Amino acid sequence: QQQLIFNERPNGLPNASTFAMKEVEVGSPKQDQLLLKTLYISVDPYMRGRMADGPSYIAPFQIGEPLNGGVVGQVITSESDQFQQGDIVTGMLDFQEYHIVNADQVRKVNTFGLRPSVALGPLGMPGLTAYFGMMHIGEPKQGETVVISGAAGAVGQIAGQLAKKAGARVIGIVGSEEKAAYITETLGYDLAIQYKLGDVHEQLKQACPNGIDVYFENVGGEIGDAVWPLLNAFARIPVCGAISSYNLKEGERDIGVRVQTYLIKARAKMQGFLVGDYTEHFKEAYEELGKAIASGELKYQETIREGFESIPDAFIGLFTGENIGKQLVKVAEQ
Ligand code: NDP
Image (cartoon, rainbow, N blue to C red; front, side, top):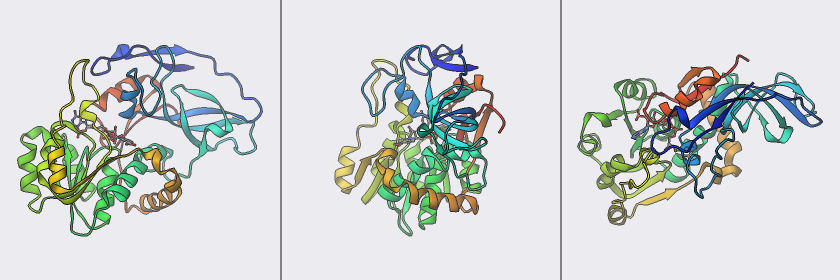
């Protein structure tokens, strides 16, 4: 079977030589272990952070070692009384086609009758991130204006719908016309701003005559800078990510640090957060998201590449905007 190895630390945008394939043995499960077949692999922007060698909230990838991330798999053989053959499970696992895992390394997935890949998107880490960032930090209220950057992505597509549900007017910032159509026509956002079409600040000013009450930050850099002057008093800014700076080359400096004076002027709350801070609320969030997704109230999209060997391209595509909704790699049929 194939395993995807971290081959070289990228300087700037990752490329083919960042990755390497390796043939490894499958093995067989012992007591309390499972043999899993990988169905879906999640590629996520935070993995770029793990490619740099430095202290962070999650350990860096090591050269020559497998990449690792969100995986949905199916139990082929179970030597554990907690799982049965055929169960769909998820966990943070190495990127390979089969896995021998201890039973406590994975959890069963309730997909609410949907395709199991939802456990890596709206009903997984990105969905929870949107939920906690928006509902616990953004706290949108009836009639407020909410702006979301990266609005057509895995997190953004859920975050804005939650704000709509709370009665806010929602404006999404996206990188293409297709994404603009997706967020307005399918997701019901009130307006889309295409940042590649020019002056984002001017476009936002037109779009937000009453200012901005919540800015869900996924991108940072110049897009964040376009938002700050429009913040209303007591605005909230869940700082979820800053993808525009993830591929800076050595020596390049992040921009977007001019926010402070505006925060003071608006007495705004800007709070960094990690989805992992909210583990005690996961259960209620899963319930709420699961019901809303199963009933069709919350919509979502997936961009799926086929085949284990397409993981590098799927990952790199996150930084060139190739995905609508959650980017996944389908490795095998259920
Ligand atoms: P997405 O599905 O949104 O994929 C990334 C998208 O970002 C691309 O499709 C592209 O869309 C946009 N993008 C890429 N590069 C740039 C750029 N230079 N400038 C502007 N937009 C860019 O990813 P996720 O939804 O998984 O993640 C979104 C953000 O949330 C990331 O910053 C990520 O790090 C963060 N995150 C944080 C978590 C936390 O716990 N704090 C957990 C999960 C994610 P477009 O075509 O619109 O440019």
